[in-house]
Length: 502
Image (cartoon, rainbow, N blue to C red):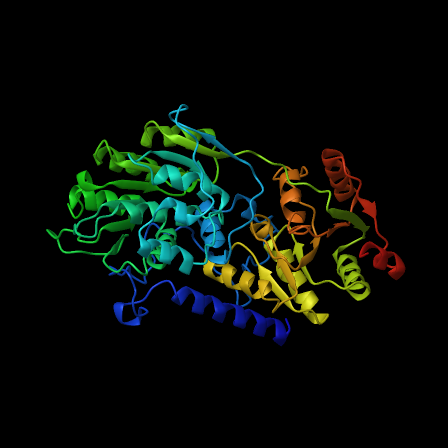
């Protein structure tokens, strides 16, 4: 493998370490004017950590020896890891085109939404914190959720909201608004499914509370040892269910009867984690009857609904109306090849004929992704590699480098098929067509993959590599499913390649 490839991996890993070190720090290293007195979590990963990372070689590729090539199960990616990745890479709110459906507990109550943060009559310190975070106007979910969350008397809420829509900032604003800084005990409690997600929410609390130094934050996460008999004086506590339950019941660090706001974040991730569902319900039952309950989930499967109804009585409900992604802005082609070496040659011909801002190339396995990345580096391309055995912080660092155009090509498995928006991506290439575990077309993954281009109002280009009768059959079935013709492209004809870019 070339020195340039190894060097690129070293740079990515260094970036990941730097990013990882931003999560934690002692009081001395905190920026001046920081709003919270942190009970600092340990650097050592706790038991509630999201995912096990298999051993990799120096290039970040899983070393499977001579074992048969297996498809990467990144489409079944650990939900907590995917959620954390989305949080790490979101620098701006996503422009969600889905319509919001509001179901009110009291249908006779006037439906109230806001178009500015001033309408919410926030405390001046919090309004300053909101603007300092770069929020100029409420996002779609915030327009509807914030008036409900800040209403008097407090109202309970179940809300569906995807990553990047501003829901964390919304419930953090509700938590901070309900707290009385004169009282030195926990009044707002937030449960997160993992240690890392708790830290991410904590960072939002710190940012929004930057101009409200009287408010303090404590982390109830495994490994954060406190002396028996102490009472938490911080008004806001964020933690994982097991530790919060211990702090409320066994250790008595928190008096749950004094909690005014209870937030349960990432509910779909929560119930996918062993034991968290039961622990969350036990915590909820300790809270006072008039405690405000807020639950957020990216998905609303039946199991999430049942869980939500157990912990949130008489709720208002905000749902996203499903809106199918459109393929109208994406031109789709396929290239006939005989083997993977011909696929690489076809890729190089495409690159030689048209100007590509940035490209994402999807492979079915980690092994193929690692091999292809090395081949493209040999051809002189700047390549980033992304796959599921990388730590989440490493993946975030790779995506950030790609977003900054330090690498022009991102080779990845399905780990990257959802939720990653890079405006400069003009071409998506399916080096391998997406199939499920039974070898049938995975239409949903196909849609998510090629949906990485043709975004932000621009036209996109999707190219599919076909190298057998089986893969041609898969492509034909994908065509039939979406009722969209996928044209054949001859990559040996440079004039024809140039035409597709126009």
